[in-house]
Image 1 (cartoon, rainbow, N blue to C red):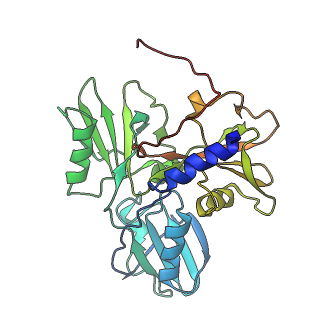
Image 2 (image 1 turned 90 degrees about the vertical axis):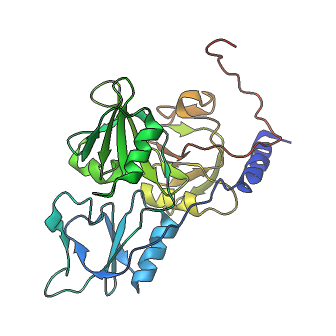
Image 3 (image 1 turned 30 degrees about the vertical axis):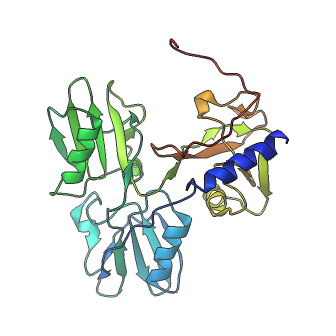
Length: 300
């Protein structure tokens, strides 16, 4: 069995333990309202339900709400609680327009793996004497004054910051830093999917490409093409003027075999992005990956 065929078999086995599963979540009741100036994507749709289906199928990063006006569907990384100014949520939308608004209810979620990062200037609550990140998560889940979407935690000082923002909603304001601008802080946010898209880097994987689609010209459409793939479990993409999707990621970027992954790409102008699985493992498989050496760190 050649290497690609072997890896394909492993991933088909993995798909039976929900590598590709996403939680759809639920929506609020429909309101005659809209977000003013904070929509991130718009397109055509025949109904509000079709607008919601688009969000479920395409999984745009961090979408929290939709507006619908006759034939226009708008997605936003904000909801009524996270817009920077309270007046940016309008109910009703305006005298001359009728918008239907719905937002995703914050249920059925998990937490991203904590990493060095933080939100600056937009934390809503400062809590002291918090034992660990799990306790910080719990404080966010129990928060009743606002919809808490993310936490910053400093283990050495046991400080937990709660925020109604996450990376997606705060990025346009330039107030999210990774790593954090000050040392010692870990960031984690709620998510209702098992995967999120990593930030793009100038890199590529050699030889293991599965699909090359010259008709897809944008990075976001290339990511969508990966998510919608049904013949195999697609976990990463490369984009230049066309879309290339891949069947497997051996490890994280720091541990990816150098013979297969190059950063920057050995060929100019390729952008790489991968689907990162949030803080959980698949069930054990009777399988292994061969032929790639690794460097042992720490004591046995």
